[in-house]
Each structure stands twice: as structure tokens, then as C-alpha cells.
Length: 561
Ligand code: C2E
Ligand code: MG
Ligand code: MG
Image (cartoon, rainbow, N blue to C red; front, top):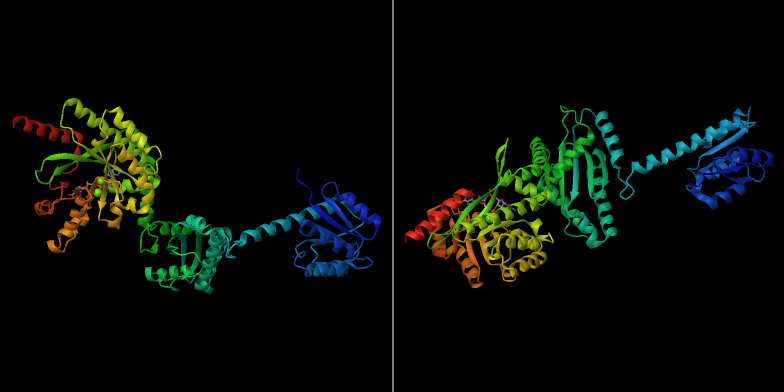
């Protein structure tokens, strides 16, 4: 049961006090005091538990006015509402009481219903006011809270129609991690520091708010600062100098308010936050403007997300195979499985668009398992037909690495389709190795022990350190196509391709070059000792039936020899 609200009745006359108590005690817990001094003692004891004071003005020891002024001057009690009881004809008493901070008055003789109503409505008023105040300011930073910011921003814009404003927001990358590593108090200190910096920048030119967690949103006059990556890089550096928390990376989003559009403030803030989120993880990029492209991108992503499950069920995803050849003999010796989405209405969809989205929304793990299964089924089918037994590479996403069942799934597939695990090559992109080497070494090491072949995809596209290479459970290094293209543009003696090739061989790794687009490239790769090649110059990704024909031709040639 909820405890009753407490009301303090301050009245020297025993009969009056008893009457008030009997009126109130059905709904409230009544505390009594005979004079002002006693009342102060009760207040001291119960402090903010008291919801309201009913005060008689004429009392011995300490009269009502003195008591009232003491209460209103003390910050601990000032917010407790006081209703004064007066004689019915005591208009001057009423005015005096109200002017000293009383919330209301009731006359004598007491009318129970009126007293109960006034008490209830004053308590209600005070509680609402307290709530509004609580939401007006964010407790931690002292900036406006979200709701109050919306309201104030609307007013600000309306009051200054001649001025142009922007919504500028920020988001901290990996804020949860900061709290984990440095502790919540350090995270809080960082947020307070950021609030101070924003207040200084915005100054009288707008208002700042702390939405929640690591999100800050400001309304700011246009042209007060010139937004650029350099400017925000400086703010970022300033924030890093604030507390012991280092390597804080913030992303800013700017929504330029246009008077031509009638967009609600809430939506403006969403859009600015969206702009900030759109550059998440992009090194060296600190801020982004919101624009319609971003919105269309979001809508498009939403469309894809709505369709993906159905597409998987309806087998709209199709596995294509791109042949891999032995560089020296140009002999077909494998393939990479690349997924294609053929949507009944939209037609062919580029993996370059949907794969990154599926990696973000997690659907990639389902799609990858589907692709792996299809590949195993194909290999099994070819075996049944007596075709050449070649390996096929499948792509393994970052998210797959974190799936605790990964090894079981792949092992299960190899068993079901009666395949040596070495027929299945697993391509993991280079950047996944640099992000979480420990996890990846463990998972891929385990898969390699089971007999699967492990390839590092896109090697040379990022920053994988060469000295880490020999600690990784790897069989194949797959050179990134851009890396190859840029190296090919350099004179042979200046490139590092030969060095990489020698290093890989010294570590007993095979080297595959992808994205081979010309004969020159192919020849050069041959000279450098690259083991396998894959690229448009040799063959594009193709449907599995077309690839099967290549396999059949291969065996026909062999038979003729
Ligand atoms: P990736 O694994 O590095 O695959 C190589 C990409 O290069 C493929 O693009 C392929 O079609 C393309 N390519 C091959 N040879 C050439 C060439 O000579 N010139 C040029 N310009 N491009 C060439 P695709 O099929 O668009 O796939 C893009 C990326 O999407 C893949 O890069 C891979 O990361 C991802 N992906 C494709 N299928 C799957 C899948 O089933 N699962 C996962 N997780 N990712 C996939
Ligand atoms: Mg690949
Ligand atoms: Mg690649």
C-alpha cells in the first residue's frame, strides 16, 4: 500500500487543530504543531516528506508570519506549499500571507470540502512543477533536457524570424566502451566537460541540450562557426584534453534549418543525428551535413531490410562463381562464391550495396550460411557427376566469427555433403584481423585445425602489420585488387609486391591476386611468382551452370590428352 502524503497542521487552538485533523486524516497523514517553533522542529525531522503546511496566523511563541518567512527563506523548505487559515473577514491577513509566499488561504469556520479540494489542488500543482523542473534540466550536465529543448528551440526560432539557425549534434563513438574501460564516473566527467565546451561555443547564439547518454544537440545561429572537418577536429582534440579519457572520437551532424521547409524540431534533431551516424567509423571524418541523399539512402536501406527475409525464403539470392586459375599454367583450379540478389521487381542488386547493410543489421550471418550450404551442395553434385574436384572459397563475415557455432555449422555441412574440409576455403577480410586479432586467431585456428583452408581477403587494403602475419592461422594471402593496381602503376623495382610475395612464400602461404584486369597485370604477377589469379581478364563471376560447363570442358580436354 502507498503511504499517505504528510500534512503539517500548525494551530495553537486545540479544538481547531482537532477539527482540521479530522477533516484531513481520511486522506492524509496529519502531523500537528501548537506553535511556529514546534512546527520548525517537525519540519526539521521530516524535511521534504511533508507535502503541505496548514498554518494559523495568530499564535503564541512564534506567530504565523514569522514562521512563514523562516520557511520561505530556507532552501530546504521553501518549496513546501503553505495554506494559511484566516478569519473570514480578514482580508488584510490574506493579502499579507499571500505576499509572504503562502500558496492559498482558507477561512474559518472550516468548510471540510473546500479545505480538502484546496489542499489536493495545491499539492498537485507543486508536484507538477517539481516534475517540469526535473525534466527541464538534465541532472548530469545542467543543460536542457530533450523535451524542454524541443520546446525552447521552437520558441527561439519563432522569436527571431530574421535569423537563420542550424541544429548541430554530436555522438561519441564507442561511448559504452569508454564507460567500461574508464568507469562511469569518468564517462560522466567527460559528458560534463563536453557540455561546458558546447555552452562556450554556443554562448548567446543558441541553446544546448543533453539528449541522453552520449548525445548532445544544440540550436545555433547560422554562420557563428564555420563547419569543417578541421574545426570539428579541433573541438575533438579539446574534448580529449578535458579528462583522463583519451582517444575519444566524436562525430557531428549538422541540419541547416530552411524556412522553406516546415519540419518539426524533433525531426530536425533526428536528421542531424542521422547525419552524424552516417559517418560512424570513418577515419578522419568528423562531421556531415544532413541532406536529402542521406534520407533517400535511409529509405532505400529500409526497403532492403523489409525485403531481405522474404528474399532468402524465396531463393532470390543466387550463388555465382568466379574462376581462379593457376598463374603459370592458366589452369582452372578453384572458384570464389559471390552472392547475387535477383529481385523479382528491382532486378539485379549489387552486393556492394546490400552486403555492407546486411553486415550492419546482422542478416549477413543468415545469408552466409545459405551461401555456404549452396556451395557445399554444388561441390557434392559435381562429385556425384565425377567432375574435377576443385576447392571453392566462400566469404566469411566479421559477424560470423563471433558466432559460437561457426565451427559446428561448417563441419556439419562438410559432413552432410561428404566433402573434405580442405575443399572449402574461408575468406576473411583483412580488416577483421586487425580489429579483433585474439578472437579471430582462436576461431580461424580452430577451423584450420578441422582442415578448412583459411584465406586473408583484401590483403593490402588496410593496415595489417606484416609482423603479425606469421602469428595468424593462414593458408592463403589474397591480394586486394586496388593494391595490385596501384603497385602495378609503379616501376617494378619500387613496388613492394615482390617483397610481399617472397615473404608469403617464406611463411608457406599461397598468394592469390584478385581483380586481374589485363594481360600486363597477369604477366607481371606471373613474373613475381604469384600462385593464383582471379579477375575479369580471365573470367567474370558466372552462374553455377556456366561454371559447371567450364569444369566439364576441362575434363574433356584432359580426356583427349
Ligand atoms: P571480395 O570478396 O573481395 O570479392 C571480390 C569482388 O571483386 C567481387 O565483387 C568480384 O565480382 C569483383 N571482381 C572480381 N574480379 C574483378 C576484376 O577484374 N575487376 C573488378 N573491378 N572487380 C572484380 P562483388 O561480387 O561485387 O562482391 C563485392 C564484395 O561483397 C566481395 O568482395 C565480398 O566482400 C562481398 N561478398 C560477395 N558475396 C558475398 C557473400 O556471399 N558473403 C559475404 N559475407 N560477402 C560477400
Ligand atoms: Mg572474397
Ligand atoms: Mg577481396
